[in-house]
Image (cartoon, rainbow, N blue to C red):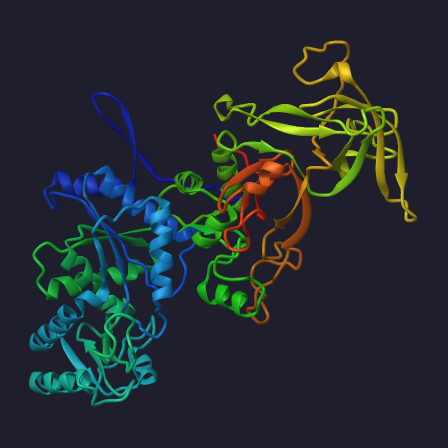
Length: 566
């Protein structure tokens, strides 16, 4: 895994050493110099898809800063592009953000709330000679803009009179032009070394029905014009965004300056959160869904926040992950193993450890009384006594994992094989006496004898065994569907096919098995999670489970390839 760079600044106080990231250093400076007297942040997603793990960093950073400084936090949707936005995405994003723990209270806003203000702002720029209506097509505008090494050419419409521009812009608003026929451009500098400042388009004609304003408008502001107005109107002090907006900052500042906001926001950029071999792009996820490879934006193999929640990840684990990644100006890539480490750390003391057999083979205790069933006490979590204990049924016939028995075991194999003795977890010592196979040589039944003196908790000290295996009682075990997930991407090939840009899909990313589980697990409800002994952490799928028939998604295995950096 790439090293995660976290830029921290050590600041001495009279009582303790405080670690701050570079954004907090800048905020402290602004407060100390009286630039702002409070901290007001926001999270402003576009409602054109589901949020993913990268968005979680921005959500938690912006919300965390508002809480740390005793300020305010706004939830705002940048809904300026009705061609891609849906109420479905608005609702899913609100649910995800609330689940992560970011509370906007009554501070929920939409960019569309400010459409009248943005229109007024555009009129103001026209009257100041800072904006004009252009007749150029999108292709011509691109051509006129020039290149990184050559200055752009002035738009033939740039010298229209203020009166003519006002009339044309009014006609744009009143629907007298077709899509793409006219645009409103800011008049800045066609020779600027920053391409974003070469008379950018700030309004376009789009005869589209908006999910909130309907058909009220047929012109819509561009993001780089709308966003600074939204921030300024809401009194945002620090507009925290990702590094791709760094080159847009001069335009952001130009807009709020030319529109004469008294206390304009300050934009500060940080590095995005990238995960190795993970699909986050909305169009790629959409393609996976449309092709039936993923069963929706919340398919547990994806890293949308909805998918992580469905799989069984917790807000606490995601917060731990974001904190480990840190806040930096430098691009870095995290490994999925680090996110998996965080969920293991969060769940290991919180969840009961239950017995489930994913690949069952029958075990018969030949000398156990016929027809007898006894109840044995089992601790729910040996590392957390507060989770208490439960009673589990035990009888003559059990099921064990197929991998826990071998006819000819390798060295240091301490589970069942002919002549070997092991402990059945929370029960007795059993010794393998014989086994049965089918016509293909596959083991179908393992025969054992048990020692009634070795009951777990009895204090037996007569001899020791090196292996302990888990089991379920055959007569009371409940069959359930269990889904075992791997990365949806073929990691050896990488995420994207270099020839056609398609996703290199892992054909074995989802395996479905019928497991046999303790009877109590049949009562599990949606989103409840458990550790299945030796098999990993599992969560009840909210979509496909029904009353008494839970479907379990494996959150993560128990084996980790990640170690916490020192």
